[in-house]
Image (tube, rainbow, N blue to C red):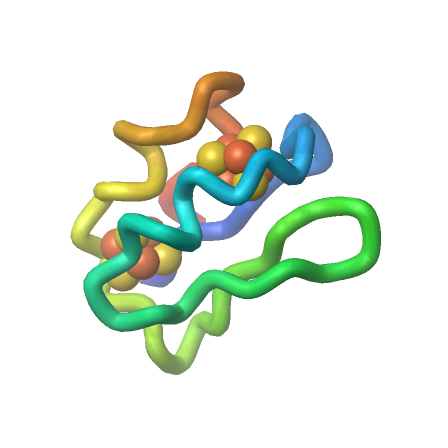
Length: 56
Ligand code: SF4
Ligand code: SF4
């Protein structure tokens, strides 16, 4: 399962910089994960200051 970013996201961009497959991009007011690209490595969850990325 891909990771999903919740509405807790404060759009800091830290997760996007650390994603190994470049699956995270800036959306409307928060960042979003391309489910087809995500390899569920968990790096974004470990990087996020507010715990927004969660295994979906
Ligand atoms: Fe990228 Fe890994 Fe997060 Fe998926 S779980 S969006 S591959 S950092
Ligand atoms: Fe949003 Fe967390 Fe990613 Fe920052 S690190 S853009 S708060 S999901």
